[in-house]
Amino acid sequence: MDINILNQTAQAMVAHNKGLIAMDESNPTCNKRFADLGILQTPEMRRRYREMIITTPGLNKGINAAILYDETVRQRLSDDTSFVKAVEDASIIPGIKVDMGAKDLAGFPNEKITEGLDNLRSRLTEYSKMGIRFAKWRAVITIGNGIPTPRCIVNNAMGLAQYAALCQEANMVPIVEPEVLMDGNHDLKTCFSVTERVLHEVFEQLYKQRVINEGIILKPNMILPGTNCPDQSNTEEIAEMTVKCLLRTVPASVPGIAFLSGGQTSSLATARLNAMNAQYKSEIPWALTFSFSRALQYPALEIWKGLDENSIAAQNALYHRVQLNANACQGKYLSEMEIEGHQRQY
Ligand code: 13P
Image (tube, rainbow, N blue to C red):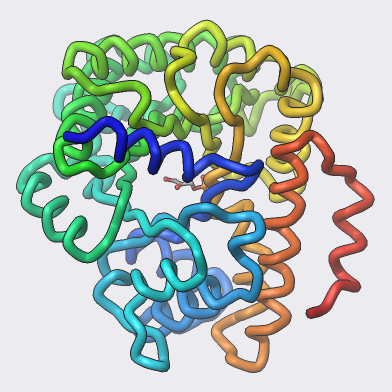
């Protein structure tokens, strides 16, 4: 493990008010998104989709790093360039999702545990040889009647810590992603207290597993009311509670925090990130940025619909979302900018 390499990579992933694109949907998740839009669910269509995303002109103006999926790193662009090289050629740092998904936690109904530690060391070695410089592991915590249980939180935190230690051993930066889901009717305060407990446990386990904070990126949820909560809270409350929760739990030695979008609409995810940076930048020790999947890509996917003739319009939509989020990293996003982008062309 070389902490200088790890820290340099982590810093580069969140530098210059830019963020990450999570284009790492597993095949079942990607297929579900395709099915909703009537797109054929094949390896070739997933390849074309990822090619459309990564060849977006100027993507690196707002994106430092891209999270890829195992299938994608074994595929090639139409011109035969490997995806990893295409990402590097775009001046973007390539990374990869390495967890094997959240599965039922035995003995704990409605709770999940993330799998993927078996053979992880050899998988990381292979990815590292391909030129991949960071990894991602997502743990899922559900809020509901009597859940999350302490055991679910501890087991998931231990999994994240073991994964993170293996990544650092391979000089790959671990993105540590404990996601408290938005599903449910819980309120903002409940999301705050659950996320606070989860993040405390995650950093406790990272410490016990000898993970170095300077060489990780945290990918948390924002503090949000459940999707079915009658009080949906305003942007300022969400920004305030999210920053408060992170200040209580995340060490200042962590280089960056890159949020997941978690099912928020694209514009809300951007507005909330913007409010945090606009109001609290002077109080926070880490870069606060984005690592969205749906909130970045969905508008482009809806335009693309699997058709080559829609690619340029889809890329324009993606570029626009990336720019809006880069503005949000500086606290300079305005809702009027949502409209302007529709007229913008290359
Ligand atoms: P969303 O932004 O769609 O929540 O995805 C982020 C992610 O990478 C989930 O692991």
